[in-house]
Figure 1 (cartoon, one colour):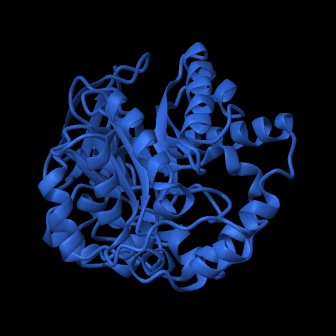
Figure 2: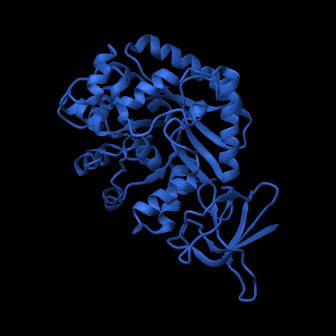
Figure 3: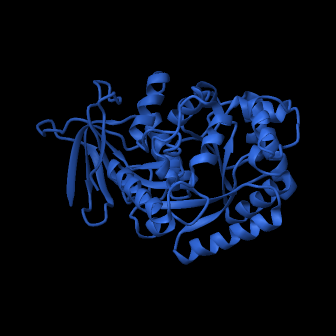
Length: 390
C-alpha cells in the first residue's frame, strides 16, 4: 500500500474536499484503498490531490496543427484554415505527434478521453497507450451511402486495433440532413454520440436565417448548406435524430461547445435526452471567436457539464488545468469541487466508465493527480500545474 497526503483531497464523491487529507492506494494497479483526514501530527504535502481527468472532447489526430492557426477568425475563418492546413503532414509525422501529445496529457493526469477521428492515424497510438479512449469516427459530407460505407470500414479498422469506436455526426453545417440522420442512427446503435452543437453565432445564423459569415463561406466554396429552419441548430439536430428513431433517447449523448445555448434549447433537450452531457472547451471557444458557454444558465438547469480541450488547431495546449483555470477565472462563483467534478467524474459518466474513473472512491482506479500551487481556499491559480502520481 502507498499513501499520499495533501492540503486538499478532492474525492469528488462528496460536495467538498477533505482538508489535510490522505489517499491510500495499491501502487501496482492504482486501486483506491482508503481516503480520510490525516492525524493532527502528520505532515501534509502542499497542493491538492484529485482523480485523473477525463478529457471529454479532443481531436488528437490534429496535433500536427499546433500553433499553425490564426486566432480570432470566427468559425468561417477557422474552417478555411482547416481546409488549407490539415493535410500538410504525412502519416508518420501525424502518429509521432499524436503520441507526443497523448503522452503529455497522460503525464499531466488525463486518464481517459473522448477523442474524434477522421482517419486511422491515431489508432496505433491509442491501441498501446495506457490512457483509455473512446473514439468517435466523425462523419461529414453529403451522400449518405458512400460516406457511411467509408466510416463502417474505418470502424472495422478500429475494432481490429482493439479500440472502442463508432460513427458520430460532426455538426449541422458540414452534413446533408440525410447523412446527419444516417450517422446519428449508427452512433445510437452503439450507445454513444458526440456532436458539435451551437459552437458559434455563425452556426445559429446559418440555420435560423440562411445568412452570416458561415453561409457566405460555404456558398463561396461551392458547398451545400443545411435547410433554413428558423430555429436553433440544436433543435435541428434533435429533429434529425427523430428521423432516425423517435424520442426518448437513453443513449449517452455529448453536446460539445454549447456557446449559444438558450433556455428553450435546454428545455427541448431535457425532454428527449435521458443521458445528455454538455462539454465545454473554453480555451478553444476563446481562440476561435472570443466567446464562452453560458455556465450560469447551465448550472441553474443542473446540466451534466464535462470539460474538453478540443484540438491543437484551436488551442495552444491540451492542458486540463488551463481549461479549469479559465473556467474558474471567468466564473469564480463556481466551487472548485464542482469544476473538478466536471473535469473528472462527469466525463467518466459520459463514457460509461464511472465505476472505474472519475472519483477517489475506494475500489476505483481513476488515476491520482497532484495539483500544485493552489490558493488558500483550495482553488487553482495561474501557477498551478498537474502531475500524475499513478
